[in-house]
Image 1 (cartoon, one colour):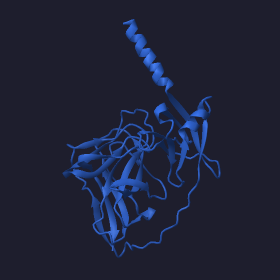
Image 2: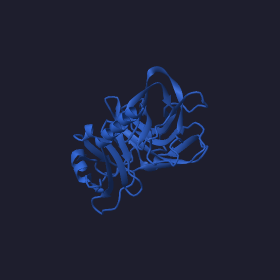
Image 3: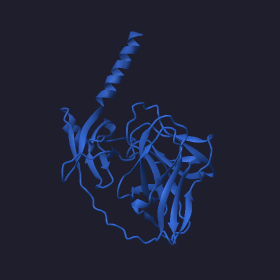
Image 4: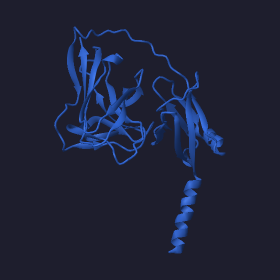
Length: 281
């Protein structure tokens, strides 16, 4: 028994010795203000987190990823990558890392679609009273669940009016972020939003509709809309569940990822009840 315990202790020490906890804070490179809720992670490796309201973060990285890059991104800033090996060297004396993001300016789009002269169409999955099929979100910061929205005609421009989603029963409040991505090789690619969309979800609020008109989102290609969990809940067992619809085939267009900057994985046979209303002329 003692021999077995010694083996476990030695193994634990070896594992801990081969990893490094990075502690840091992210700042605006121009005014040196902290940047809140930044996505931080090793791209595609399911190692990631998000900074808090003060731009602070902690992330443990295994030595097998020391040769990789740490990517940080946030709406309103240019994404940036850092050498993990260099960050580990700087953290060897328990130094708090200071990372910077450069602010990004966006060109304001001219309003092309006139809502008064356009018709409203529904895109995505229908909202139903269905409690039999659910998908649960992951508990890690930066986890996302979303749906590919396919446009019926690619020669039209669609002005996004609102976003409706259907949650299973929950007895807690939380806050999430809506992201909209372009599609590349049938997968979510780059975030196309110019500003963050934060949503406070009340307790026991199941069907929620979010106004998108004020963001002037004019789309002419298929896109992916997701809900991201960027704030740590005091009780991590409290995770949102999404009501779903059954798909006609295994390809549903529903994807999730476990952490910030993680890889996207498709959900088979079911899709989340996400619906977009849009104006089209």
